[in-house]
Length: 418
Image (cartoon, rainbow, N blue to C red; front, top):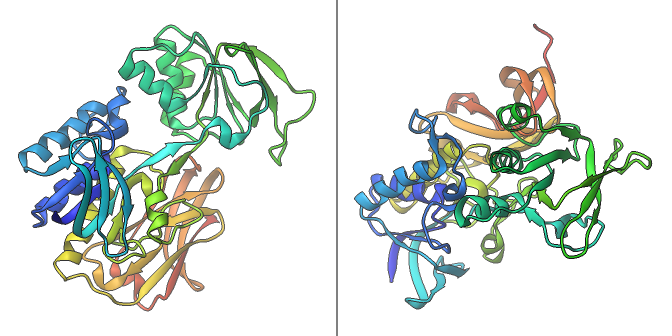
């Protein structure tokens, strides 16, 4: 079977990419989704807060997904559920498998990677203690409670203050559980400020910054966890341990972009993001293979995933239509105070409007400036009253800002003006 474009993943990135590709002239498009329904993680996110940027209204996750699914159906875009992609070859042929079609060998002009990300588990952290039932990742608990109808526990401690953990603190409280505390290793939260306020402060759930779980007790089921303060090197401080009697420990300790397929086909990955190095069109180092959403870097909002996916789809369409320029690329790099910058490469000739650089800072900054430099020359400087690692920042540049630049650096500078 031959397709112009195959999209791997039917979550928010894959859905938005497929629709935008269709609107940009592509006809033979196929989405391959390994789950039993389209929508990805959105289907278990029954809280609101989705759609404010894309639809200018507040929706739940399933409502937000359904808007795209309905449009996908109206455009007649093909998709296959319960389908696992096994490999991508260097010639961009895709091998996939499902119980209905068996083994599929698909020839394709371009590919968009939209596989999303997965949660870090207890094994990745090596938390000491016994191995009882009652230890869940926050996303697994969310699926059990919101989609499968199971309550995961009654007295809960959460390790990590990522957004899923914060949202589950509120969700479990609303379901009648007692959330004793959220412990965060770093001296700042990894989640959005609005979630700290709406999910913890509004329910009097304590957030313990610079704390971690140092022991799990229990045989068949979690009976207690021990939390200790950590020093500036993130090592537990003896004498600060406190025991919390509970039956459940949720882990919200980071997300890892799903790039096993990317790695196998030889796509260059950025060690800072865990995702592919991409251009302004979201093309990876493998020509004709594009990537978008949380497989590139973990986003704060599904709306931004959708917008990035639309950009990848336009890039794929231009690639297939043979109108993408192949000029010299400008490197975009993180400087002091910035953890990463996406995209990492920009072809100035392909910019039809402004290019938006997405980035995260490394620490809490108040009254500071984000500066984009080419050598010693400042080409963009933006005042920020507050920046935190848990909230993605962006800088928009026009093509004329990049004239004569071979590389640019984005960094944090102390603001001297008030």
